[in-house]
Each structure stands twice: as C-alpha cells, then as structure tokens.
Image (cartoon, rainbow, N blue to C red; front, side):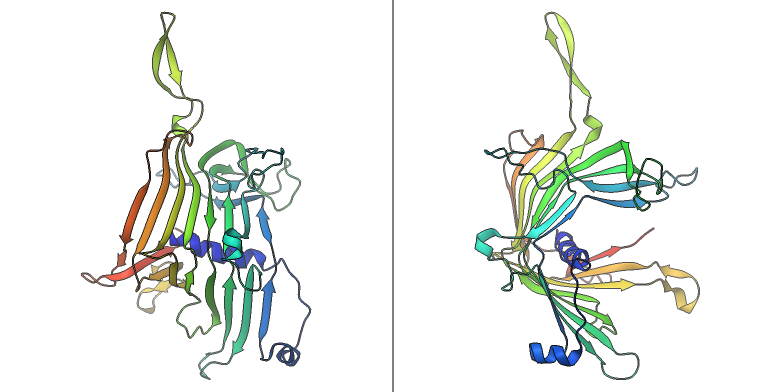
Length: 353
C-alpha cells in the first residue's frame, strides 16, 4: 500500500508543475525577501482534475505468433450520478478519472501551515568540488491529500489523428472494446515531506521520503470487478412449471469500504523511502545488458511494523451483506541483499519489458 503514498506525492508535484507561473527573480532580490539565497515556491492549488488517463502498451501481449494488439489501461469517470437531498451532484469522479484535492478532515489537521497544496524550497549547491559534484536540492512539503480515482479498466488503444477525433494529440481507446477492472477507490493521506536532489545527489538517491504521515493512510471504496461473470447463468428456478434461467446482469464485485494503515500501536505512519532511477547496467563493461533500465524504490522499515484495519468486506456486490472486518496487527516485510540475510522493508522495481 505504500506505493499509493508515493504515487500521491509524485503525482501532486508533477501535475502542478505547469499549473502556476512565476516572474523571474534574481538571487539577490530573493535573498532580501526570504532572508537566505535560494528559491521558495508555494503551490496554491485547491483541486486538480484529470478527465481520462491512458497508459498504452503498444505491442500488447506477445505470443508465439508475434506481437499482440495495442491495449491501454484507462482511468476515467464512472458515470454514476449521485445526488444529495437538494439534487446537487456529489460524485466527484462522475466525469473525471482523477480528482486530487487537499485533505480537509479534522478541521485541517492534515494541511500545511501555509494552507498550500505544496511548499518547495530550492537551492543550488556546488557540492564537494570537482568530479561533477554540483546538485540542486528541492525540499518539498506536501499537504494531506484527498485523491479520488474513478473507474479503472482496459481497452484497445486508438490511433492518433483518426477521423473520429478532433485532436492531433488524443489517442484514447476503443469504447466498444472496454472492460472495467476496478470500480474506483479513494486515498486520504496526511502531511508528507520529501527531499529531491538532481545532479550529483549526495543524499544517495534522487528522492528521499523521510517523515511521519499524520493520521496514517486510508484507502476507501475499493471495488474489484470480475467481468467474466457478467450475463452468466448461475442456475435455474421453477416458474409456473417451467425451468427458468437465473442470470447475472452486472459484473461481480469485491468491495472494501476502508483500509486504514498506521505504524504498529500508533495513530500515524512513518515514511522512509529512497527512490532512484537507473539506466541500463552492462556486464563487465561490455555491450551486454545485465539489468534493464528501471526505477528502484527501497522502503527502510527500521522502525515499527504496520497495523491495518480493513472495514466492510462485501463479496459479489457492494450492496451485499458484509462478511465483517479484518484486522492485521504488526505486519512486517523483509528483503534480502544476500541469501540468508533479512532486512526490514521492501524493494520495488518498475521497468518496461
């Protein structure tokens, strides 16, 4: 579940990069304003909306007969209209795949003091001198986030510039070849701190997350869909002496109301991760690739284990009776750097194939 936390942080900074403009300011003027050299940026955004998000796999699933057909993971609005007592729409992801806003729970307890979505402090440093040691240091503070994700599915990829589209850039997918996988989910985070170094990165990683997420991490309204059961007969009943098929109309769903994660016997969640981006690694300096380019995320769980509380597990339909709650106390993961050794934490590697 920690991957969701990192995704929320990276998304909030990446999406907001083009959402504001600044007038150029020389270093001496900034020094007089803030009391020190460097650059400070406050990102005052209250909400970010994304209509649709596609991740295209251009060659599909390779088989013995060759490449498959291009497909895409798509995040889009779920199209469900939910009205309050006054008839106002309350579903933030009805027409949007992703909606990111501040977490206003508990009277703003999870917001930065500045009430910005994020505050960045940027410094340039020459490093130890010589040997290409210069780097940029970006200290990022991010408010607690309320992230709502609509329906997640898979579709056949479209083609850019098709006659059916009015945009030269939009590729999208084929609407009549689409299957939903997740009915959606919500993430609520507390405040987070990260330090980013570009250049020599003397801290040992491009991104270091090392802070305490006040209030922990919560994942809400998670629904996993099984489209293979849609429109399937599951038996028959006698209706007036005639055996009548009993069939489903919608996909089956495993629905979880809430997953809350904190440190063991705590109200908060400690973060301690290093994120590094590796290029291809070669065997003995040759041209043979021994390890393909990838992103490596190492979680350093030197502190306590984790507690998880899973509330409201519904099988078959979100409206079905809950089978109850599940509680996990003191969950600890380990990774090995050599056979027989165990280090608290986890290593996640993300790459193409």
